[in-house]
Length: 260
Image 1 (cartoon, rainbow, N blue to C red):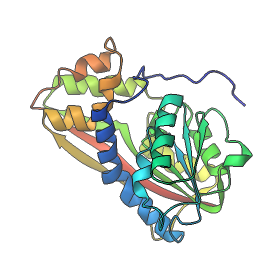
Image 2 (image 1 turned 30 degrees about the horizontal axis):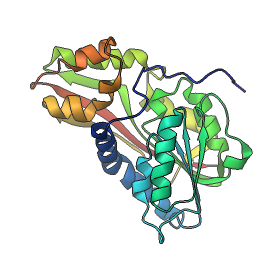
Image 3 (image 1 turned 90 degrees about the vertical axis):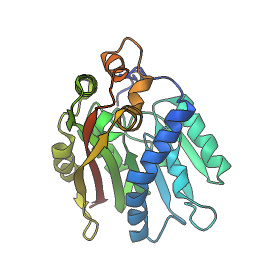
């Protein structure tokens, strides 16, 4: 087991401001929630189920449940940032959800047995940031019960493209330089199979290009997370110069797998 300190390679702010929380809520609602609801419907809904959210952030997943009729028996939250994890736990508690939290990084160490045997594991916009995707998928698979589901929603930044704005290209390149996972859209299916996962019949996985046009859409929506990097970071410096002519094509991914 890796016992080295957890490291934030992005140098982000410890807690997210209101604008970034709103952006993350919108991204979750648009790109993760529909996929999560489809997966939950195949296991009879969340009631009585154990769900694990990997890279929980400040708890956007809480919006997917409306107690008491759609309440999981336990919502488990994992994140390497304890302050964000506390925010997520407070949000879940306020929504009436029974919650367990665990500070850690899914690619650095497996979960304790007490947090395994989950009916569903959600990994929303976290896989692309893992230092070791293969280890992360093995540990997520190990946290599932047999036939349990892994739901992955993410962006392959290294397969994304910018147009008409040099600063956007510089920002995207700087973000790409930080990533250990260089070919997420190619690696995820292959490594999922190796980890003991299989695509779920009737719930196809998909990758597509999502177009963002204009300064607000590119800087504040698509790349809003860069605004929390340190000011001296090259990505942040380029991010501040994104122009109204900016155009960005992000390769988005929605995948569902079942543990064999």
